[in-house]
Image (cartoon, rainbow, N blue to C red; front, side):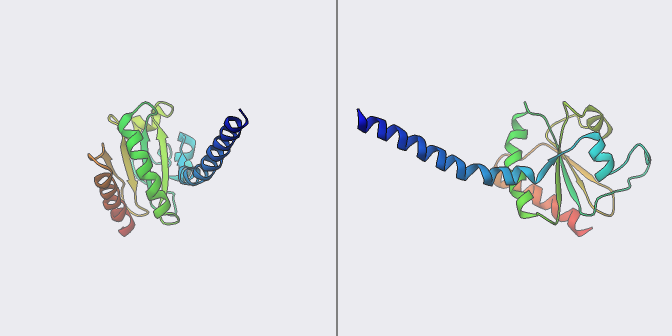
Length: 154
């Protein structure tokens, strides 16, 4: 009986220890992709209320904006890839995410009709938008990197 109790306590301890080591890595990556509201967008990216006809970027670095929904399967596939890239491009590119169910106006303003959709904003020049994701993680990452390189070169 004592042996079973000891094994159970050891298993719980190991689970808690392992879980405690994994969570900080993921939470750091997730925290690099900032959730964005309309107010955040107007303040950090572009104030389309003041400049409805002209794109005037407010950021200091290029950014990638992920338009997603919690219920969207492909969005859940793209999310970890974006987390990896947010770590890789930390300090060079800002990453944001917009929940289209909560921020319907932002989705409308940018013509988001399919998710996931991504807005790539260079510091100089107009943004570009892509929709959907590739078939596998390697292709997804390659597509994101290609688009990110374009906004970094402007």
